[in-house]
Length: 368
Image 1 (cartoon, rainbow, N blue to C red):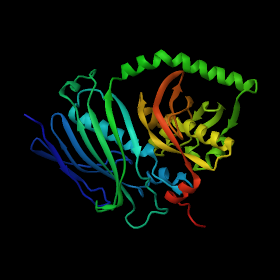
Image 2: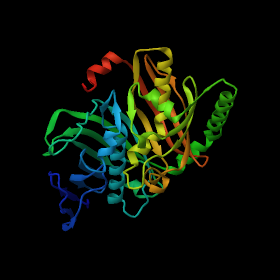
Image 3: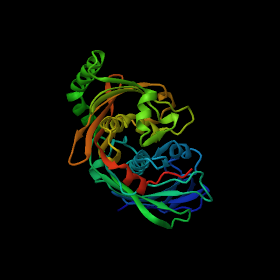
Image 4: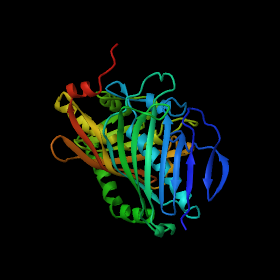
């Protein structure tokens, strides 16, 4: 017999106790998973499927700094890392509902694609702007084994009004999430860890001999400011060593205890890729910028790595070699190390070169 769970929650901005129905019984519960996933508006489960709608307000006190600290062309945007954060949070929640007695497996956020940038209003007005994620999951019964893999959820992101009605440009982004075996990740990563570390060592040797560039944090983020402006909590790169499209960076999380960190720490771990693309364009004197087009996969071995307050101040190292993929597109895999071991991998992260005049049309800078 199928297990059915159904929930219908409020659509207002308040977080009142609501009711979840499980096997004919009900109990009061609050439906806030995190600042990224503030309201579960509806949810339905069977033994192997899940359907959820989750809604969050950009004016939320924990979420607001994530938006205000991330500006493209001087325009505050919802970052792709927030979409990934929402998808990972939903994936964890679905697993714990369907398989409560097993450990959550590896979560791979795949095929992230941002279709239309979500421009935030500063300050937020009225009931604020809202982002809604619609989630559909299919987890085979076999995944009830803690060591098994498989199962996929699809996520689509929309901008909505406070009452849930769509705005004029509702469909914003999409991604999929796969449940995978973390032990297989470790095995795969161990095969090339030494090669990546050798590349980092050789790059630093070249810098010592004047064959590669070294930039400290202030200058590195000055390069970013040709297109992206980050507040202090986003400026995780301390030093960048690079030669063309190959680079390594030392990273320290700059958020403070009490901050909501997940999205910001994810951004920190892959900043190197966007830096290299835009640094190359600056050297070539091109009147264009490289804009993120998403990624093929994002794997974090321990999601608490992104969430724990004690991770603030921890030093990490990232490495990437970006390569041309078709006309005006650069693509690469970013590896982030903690204590000499791979902690996060961004697979197939992409940036497309766009003329600034075009950027000024779809992201018009504010008039002063």
